[in-house]
Length: 177
Image (cartoon, rainbow, N blue to C red; front, side):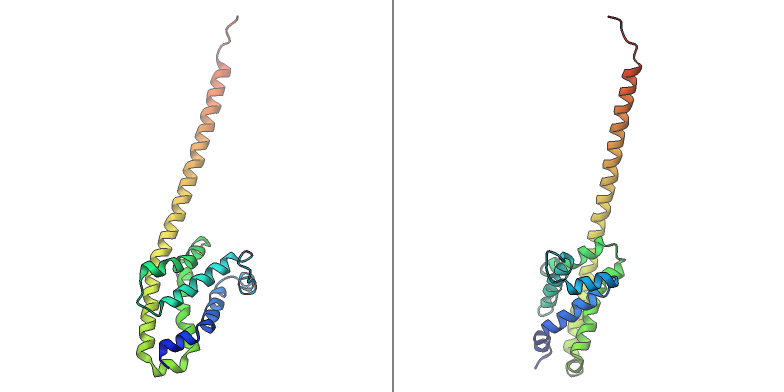
């Protein structure tokens, strides 16, 4: 059986272990929740991660096309970017896939070293695409924060101007009628 066939045959096992490895990058209580809660409405983060890694895993069976795989990477990275992970922490999930595959298919790696190296190269490509996505997410977050500060400042200035105008009106001499 070819290496790709073994990757395909062990898909659910590898995805389960990969999801568990990703969940373990969170705090213990969060990891427990992510692993335990299966309802997508009660656990949207876990559901988003699971859907994302399924699409990412399937991308390993063809040439890496950034346009095709980016939405799946984005599902996982966007959550991690918002959660204030450092870049290395946010993107470690890609490299965890290598470890999970090594563990799940350790005997096949010795038999198909070239196929394993090609697969690792694809995962490295995914990591590079992931970094770009992470940076775009962080830039967007920072821009949103800057916009919010600008809006707050504008509201404060409007309020201050209103207070000043009210003060000036109160100080105007009253005409006797």
